[in-house]
Structures are given as C-alpha cells and as structure tokens.
Length: 263
Image (cartoon, rainbow, N blue to C red; front, side, top):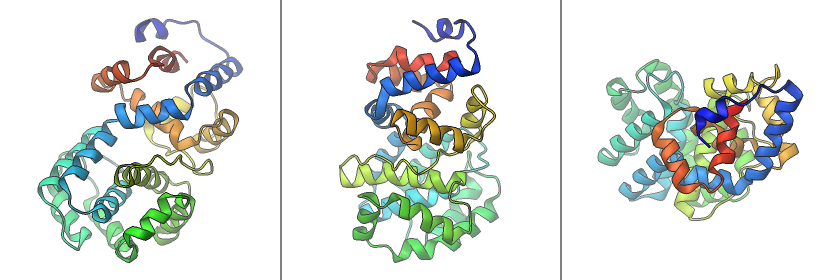
C-alpha cells in the first residue's frame, strides 16, 4: 500500500487514534526502531562516515555530543546538517579545542549559520566537561549511564533535563557509542523525546499534552523508550525520498510503519 493510500484512510477519533498508534508501535518494537536507526536514519549514516575518517574513538564521541548541543535553529534540514558536519570534520579533524574548531566551521556552514556566537559560547561552557572524560568513562556512560550523562549535561548547561538539545545529545551519544563500541544498548525509558518541530506537530494529531509527557506515557505503555520512538517517527516525518527508499529496502515492517502517516 502506498503512502498516498494511507493518507486516504478514514479519520479516527482521538481515543481510536491513540489506541491504533500504540498498536502499531507495539508491533514495530525496539528492533524495528534499531533497523530504522542504523539503516534508514541519514544522521546515523553521517556518523558512520565520520567515524571511518577519524583515528580516535574518544574524539569521535565527544565531537558528536558537541555537535548535538548546537543542533538547533538550523538553516537547513537536520539530515543535511549532520552530513555537512560529517564531511567537514572528516576533512578537517579538530585539534584539542573543539570550541575554536566550531568558531571556524559555523560561520561558513550552509545548514547551521544562525546564532553562531551563542552556539560557540555554549560549546565553550561544555568543553571542559568533555575534556575531563576518558574513553573508559565514555564507555561507562554508554553501558548503563545514559541517564547520568543527561543529568550532567543538564547541570553544566543549566538547562532542564528534558530540554530538546539535552535529550538529543544523549540520543546522538547513543548512536556514537553504538558505532564506536560495536554493541547496541537500548535507551533508558526515563529520557524524554526531543521536542522539535516535526515531533511537536505530529503530537498535536493525538493530544494537547506536551510531547515529552505524551510520548513518555506511550513509551511506558508500549515498552519502547521515547528516544527509540523518536527514531521511528522523526526520519519518516521528514518527507525525504532518500529515507523512504531506505525504509522500503531495509524494513520488513515497511507498510505498518507507513500507517503512522494515517492519523
């Protein structure tokens, strides 16, 4: 069945929508989320490219975390921003000062050229924490400490624990850790979904609750952590033919995933 056909399905009531949403997500499960993350999401692809071009796992993970924290108010699509980041630092590996590297990169960026000064300042506040971490400590955060990492980032930047860039940094840290350490670790249930424009708009189809509250509840009821729900929804909501092609190629539950568009 095509995407256009799903868009023609009869309108459901609010309660029916939520029940069907939970049914679809429960059937897709974490394993489908993992397939979409690793085979469909263009951001994961960009990170794999960067990893192949850097000689240090520690630098790779730290660079991904830093980049996630300034991934807001973009001047282009998120997928294109992460590929620009990947290409740039693959050809221009940063030295010991990430803040200085970004002060050169951002003014020339095509997809993240807004609010350069506040973003560089934010990295300046966060970089001492990154500098303090060894690869062993990064491994510890990945294998069982992602919630603690969220809390540390929140404290250092004086931001709410469920702020979009804080939880997004944990998500991208999870991607980087999976690539660098070669093992899949599910995200903790207690970390909220990043509330960007795609997710916020989609959430309004079901509820007036905040996205963080709604998807945390849906996560508990389906057994899928909110960051993995984000992985299922966010790439598909981008309306990118590259993503849809990869979804058809790699996801056996392709048609079921497409039904998420019917609400």
